[in-house]
Length: 207
Image 1 (tube, rainbow, N blue to C red):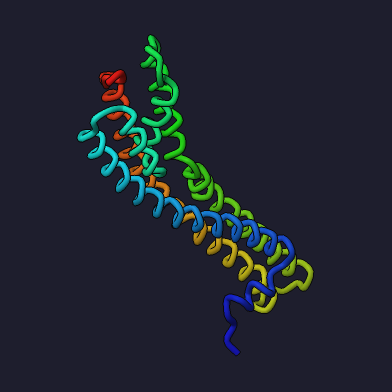
Image 2 (tube, one colour):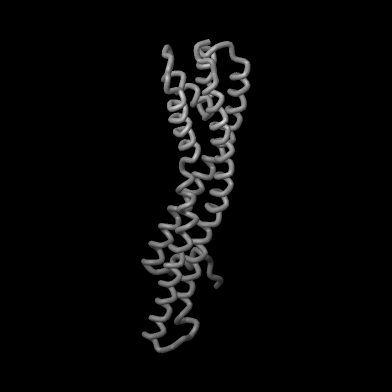
């Protein structure tokens, strides 16, 4: 009878099952973040472009503020709203500090959850390796107990080791690829925020 991966998982010990559950947690949350960030970044870029077009054709700060409310996912629209709300009706002498503050907050929002992908990519292979080592130790323990190194003796421990190794890689590889891709996308959006910040410093807020 052919042994499936599910059968191998069922045959693993308590430690290996605990390792697999931890890796499953990392994998599920990583994929959730991957789908979420893919959708968010796509919409961020679209809304940034639409708001910037509106910014270039605006007739005044209040009108542009109303337009900015329609682009909830755009970091530069959000930056404009925050700065406008902070200095409305004032003649601020610390405009640069205000703009820097809110642009930094927007950059942090853009980079949110990427740290979890980095953590997944760097730690799950080692979690899987722990399961691997444990499985090999278990195989040697069975050899010592039975005094035999036959396939039947070592197979459960080796299978346990291979399953946890594969699970660690399965969690890590997509997370690393996604982290590198999303970091690149985040840097592009953050550059747009920084460029827009420079524009706001020269913007005639009183018109």
